[in-house]
Length: 444
Image (cartoon, rainbow, N blue to C red):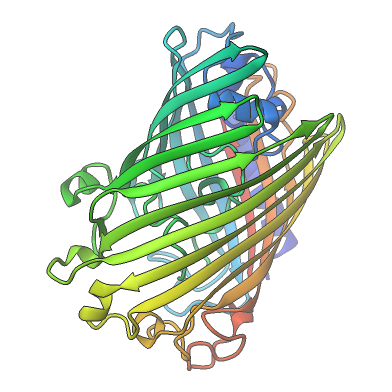
């Protein structure tokens, strides 16, 4: 375990860096709207109703008195401890356990491109220290327009983006779902549904959306994989990647009534795609359908808040290509993924979060034999987190849009890659992957 002295050293280093580098999410939005971070965020990146409306309007609201362009930056430093050391090291250049790391740094453009035309953007590029790559990251460029018809507000727009669900207004869909920050040096289960990041950054797409009366939201769009050449140009490693065959279809529908300080969203989302595994042609395609349901409740009082998010995704797969190539033992498979998270915060400064996750699917020695002794993808566990975000109501006088977060997170695995005990056939247990993660997050 890490000593109190090492914890204190990391915390003090984070504080020093926060004031040395004038540091929320995103500071450029705060400069544009003239609002503090807590107006848009119930703890970054969870959006408030005001934040959801700002995003739906294309990141363009009037009221800015700042002449500073819409650029921001973010970086994360961390300490990671796993219950059992990782043979061969957690990553190249790192030890088997107890690793301090500078994880990544991101540069953003956030806000209006043309207020008159209703064009705005969230554009992120990231340097990942573990991979040594500088690449494009979450990107969402929008044109939006709002109007009043009768006594109802209509907000509609078009988004060019690179990640199905990155456009979403709630924190239940995969792009913005909890955990919002996790260790890049800790083991994690390998199985996910397609919509849970498989096309993130490795695709490009366009969606169109409508928000009616701040109550009903609908969105539909098409995505396609990047070519290997374009992937390399944008810093995305194309090695072993799949490619879509024809467009992948994304959809979203949500209803969110609000009353007083309460809001409650219920919705559905999904993705339908045909892919060429490993870009190896001549064997047909693997066809995937993901259908998700979700809900989010928020209570935002003056001094404290409570939020609850939950989602469940059903995935069905017809693996024509993988089966023909001998990489799957069954032609048809299924996966289900569930996530629940509850948070309580005081003064938008101190927050406590508890989450649960579960992935379960049909056993297949072709798909999972390399990671699981019983060829199963099943994993589940708990996540607990404590956060301290001192500048949500305004940063230091010399840079009032600065912010910093200190977080302490613990991941506890009940089952890992198919079993709670001896999941790999070599004596490894699920709890061996339990992870203590201490991080300092800066935005400026």
